[in-house]
Length: 150
Image (tube, rainbow, N blue to C red; front, side, top):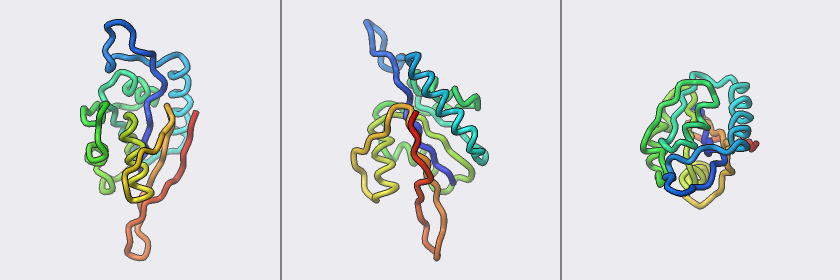
C-alpha cells in the first residue's frame, strides 16, 4: 500500500464573516497544488484513491489531480492520527491512498509512521510525504519513499 499525505496548499486568510472551512486557495496556493498534482500523476500510482477533508482549501487541493475525490469529515480540521489511519485503512488497503488534510494531524502521522511515536512534525503547505509498507524477513516495515514540496 502507498500512503500519500498531502497538506492543503496556501489559503486566503479568513476575512469578515467567512468561516474557516470556506477559505479558498490563494493564486499561489493553487499554483503549488497544481505543481504537486502534476508530480503525483507522473508517479503512476496504482489505483489511486483521493480522500479529502471537507474544508474548501483541502478539496481544492485534491481536485487539482483531476481524479474523483471522496470528502470525509474525519479528515477535517482537528482530525487525529487515528482518524487519518482509519480513513486510509493503513496498512491493509490495496493501491494508493492520497490523504489531503491539515496540520498538525498529518505531521503527527508522519512521525508515528517513521519514529513510532506521535510528535509535532511539520509538513509544509502543499507538501507531500509518500509512505509505503512492505514485508521483509516476516516483518512489516514502513518506508518513506519521498518528500516533495512545491
